[in-house]
Image 1 (cartoon, rainbow, N blue to C red):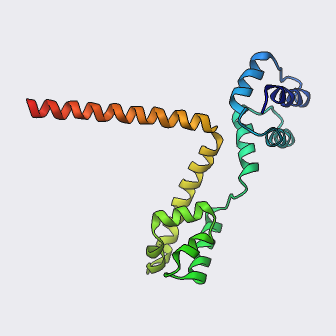
Image 2 (cartoon, rainbow, N blue to C red):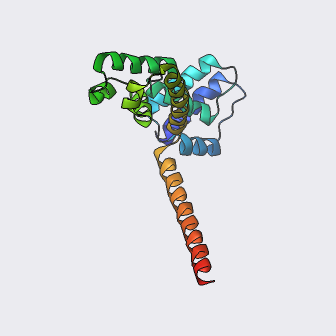
Length: 182
């Protein structure tokens, strides 16, 4: 999205919320935080928020609304469990690939973490269901949170994490070297 398109979105917000003021700094900050979004998606997200809220949205609310528009695969944990039970009935223990392909991406990933065979062979499906529901909620929440960040920010965070990990490794190596020498 261009800076001009961000300015248009801010003008819509100013028209909808009389106390919402637009200046060059606000345009710059909103462009920096929302520039990776498609204009049509961001515009629709803002319109949706205007219809739902009596106060102007924050950048985070616009990103969240845009993510909801572009990621319609938002199953509840119970609906996801329904996908699992349907796949068990339709494909059984031996056709894991087909079973996973029949599920939404999030559901399939949680099933991979738990183990298809373990789910199918469990004698206490109630316990497995409870574990799946909790795991699905946690994984879906992480995915929703990740969807809010622009790719460039995700990459920067990943690099910072790698640098910190490397520092920890170096510190541990120094400690071990000190112990071996001392």
